[in-house]
Amino acid sequence: MKSLQIQYSKEVARELGKIAVYLPGEEIEVGDILTFPYGKKGFLKKTAPLGSFQKITSLKNLGISEVKVQQSKTPDSYRFTSKQAVDLQFGVRVDADLGNDTLPKANGELRIKLSAEGAICFFALHCFKTSLDDIMALENEINTKGKKMVWEDTYLVTSVTIAKKALIIQSNSSSSELTLGGDVQGLQSSSIMKVKTDAKIHIKKQTGDMLIKDWSDEVTVFMDLMKFEKETFATETKNSSFTSKSLDTDIIRLQPVSVSELVENII
Image 1 (cartoon, rainbow, N blue to C red):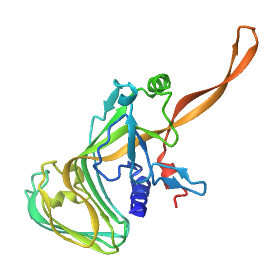
Image 2 (cartoon, one colour; image 1 turned 180 degrees about the vertical axis):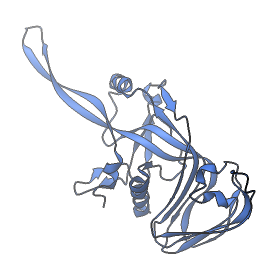
Image 3 (spheres, rainbow, N blue to C red; image 1 turned 90 degrees about the vertical axis):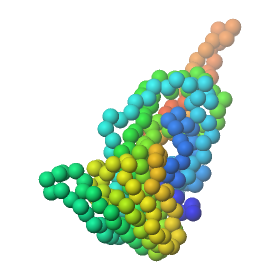
Image 4 (cartoon, one colour; image 1 turned 90 degrees about the horizontal axis):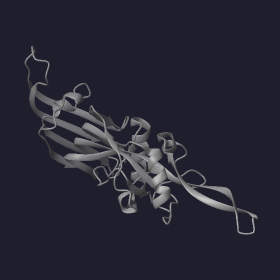
């Protein structure tokens, strides 16, 4: 299970340029503070946001309840399959009006064949992203209110991307297959942006071992993160005898997590 988590995160990062929420649809909000118990990478075993996460607290619990957020104005849709490990076979009976450029009506099947352990098939429709707006002001407030927290290997969720509808599959075996029925014609790559969120899609048949996020509403699929890091600097003060004294002071810095960090030197 652990290796499948890491493989999912790594592949989504490499192919989509995104930090994955694993499992897709897990409850997570902007302002949550997370750790990644399986997110070790490289020779030095440094942590990275890979695989499943644990929520340890939130900005709200630190007394920072009003944070500014912004939402993307136009949605994105995603269709992704693991290279050379997923075969999509459409069998659709289409009733089309050639003078109409909207999606034709159809009832049919989509067979999804996964031929490798960890292979992914990913459809996420009408995704909107909600992001923190003012990181610098937030950093200052954290240093004021979060002094007693242990910050080692912790990450702040600075954005979440939620799909209005999503279907996500990961194979747990070297051979598995899923058959979908309904309005499946829109899941073809050229039509994915036209698929409406009220499309009726259902699982007709399943063989083999796989993890499935069924055709669902409001599925959290991606996130952006910043890592909490301590920065220590020296200050000089004067005591009552006017003698200079050096003090070490810690402040918290928020460091952006780049996708490239997830795909480099992962073991």
